[in-house]
Image 1 (cartoon, rainbow, N blue to C red):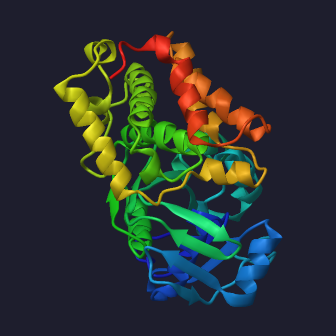
Image 2 (image 1 turned 45 degrees about the vertical axis):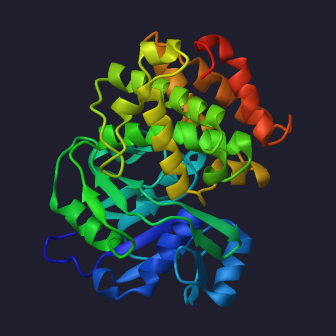
Image 3 (image 1 turned 135 degrees about the vertical axis):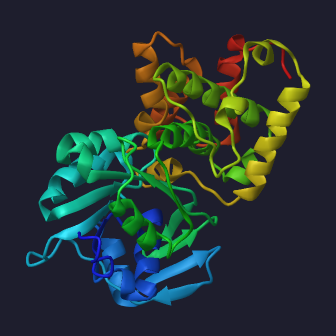
Length: 363
């Protein structure tokens, strides 16, 4: 990619679920001046057949509409190299996807990680750190049925490199993704990633255990308390790694949200009330958000909990930082995947009950 060739970007999207499908549809829909070709690839024959028959169907916060397009089962053999490979597969499959499609990168092409968690480091081990960009997704998306993609909230992206360097490539990627939502270029990808990881350890995991969307779940005080505890453990590990946390969406401060020792030990305080109030507001704003891990379990697929709570637990062990709530939450998600119990409010309440000894008097 040369600086003067921003209007001829070739884009390959790997994975056409809630995020990948929405991205593919919206990139196809808009003026093609920012890209010369977009190829979307899915290994799911039901999705491929649905889109190839009737196009991409968008719904949710987007105006309901059909966008012409198609999906390939494989990258066409005669495809020239790509400037961007957007990895939109679930975290458990990101390394396999990177290995399989690395040969399709252009000479200066890059892979972009849309996954939650810390997947950039895994992909960098395959294609090299200089060829990886992180793209933190600040909006929700789900696939209602094959070929029907619901955007559950508005928002944009935060993009950056592992080494924190800024370069023209990030500006080209931002220009491309601004079709979908506002893009922030960051010099602190690690700080933004760890803040989002803390949120996902809470929201995605509790949404899976509770079996419901974020809005209804956040109305329960014990759910909000569990969210605070999951985030607090994640923040502790991030600090041990020397990460300077970034505010999420410019306002959600994980350093402030994390419980201090006094808040863990007392029945209530003004600061706890404020933190619960903020989580209520988050639940109201993203009330339609549904955990992708819950969808994975419902479809009999591997949940990504090892890339969320599991990442916190394993890294916490290396610093001798206890992460018992994340550890038990991870265990319980895997139990659901293996058919032990069902996602329900009482399942999430069991996590609260089993970790009661870790906190002070009930709020």
